[in-house]
Length: 288
Image 1 (cartoon, helix red, strand yellow):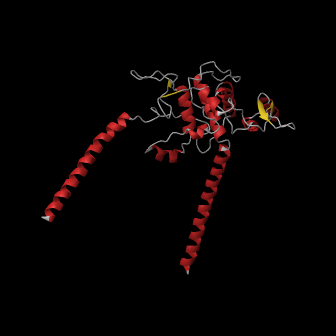
Image 2 (cartoon, one colour):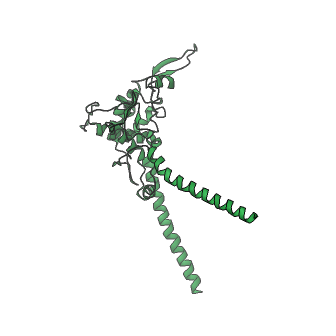
Image 3 (spheres, rainbow, N blue to C red):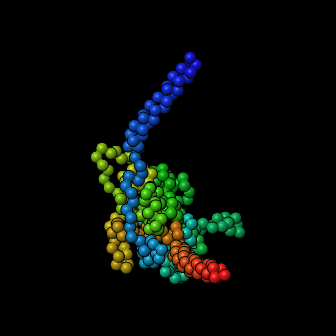
C-alpha cells in the first residue's frame, strides 16, 4: 500500500512539473513579445578612420567635432573629465588653446579675503559645465540630467548578442559607442501608427533605454558653419561629433594600437626563435 501511494505521488509530481514546463515554454515567447528589447533598432555600423588595428584619428574631423560640441552639445552636456590643454592633440597650438580656454570663466578661490571669485579659464582647467549642479540640470531638461560626454563613446557601447560578438573578436570591432551616437543623432523619426509619445518626449528607435526620451532633435542642416568646406549636414555633424567623443573617451587610442602591433610583431619573432632553438636542440639530442 505504501509503495502504491508513493508511486501515485511521484506520478503526480512529475505530471505537475511537466505541465509547468509546457506552460512556461508557451508563455515565454509571449512575454518576450510584450517586452521590447532596446534599442528597437541596432546602431548602424559606420566606417571610421580609427577602426581596425591601424586606426588613427582624423584631426580635421576632430576639430569639426569640437566645433559641433561647442556650438550645440555644450548647451546641455558637460565634459568634466577633459582638460582644455588636451586640445593640442587635435592639432591646435598652445596659443590657440589658451585663446579657446579664455572664452570661458571658472570659479576659483578662496582669495585672501576668503571669498570665491571667477576668472578666465586656463589650459589646465577642465571644460565648463553648463549647469551649476545636477538639480539645475534636471530642472532645465524635463527632469532628466543630461549625461556627461567625457566617456560617452565608451559608456554607450551596445551589447551585441551571439553570434555577432564572436565575429567581433576577429574583426576587432570596437566602435559600438560612436556607431550608437551617430545613429541616435540621425535616428529621429515619426513614431509608428498607434504609438503614443509622452509629453515632452521624442521618438527615437536607436535610444538604448526606451523608445522615447527627453532630448529633442539637436542637429539640423546648416546649423554649424565649417571652415574647411565639409558638408554642413546632419549626417556630417553627427559623424564628426561622434568621432570627437571617441577621442575624449580614448585619447591614447593611436598609441595603444601602435604598441599592440609592435607587441604582436615581437611575439611572432620570439615564437619563431623559440621554434628554431627547440628544433636545433632536439636535432643535436637526436644525433647523440
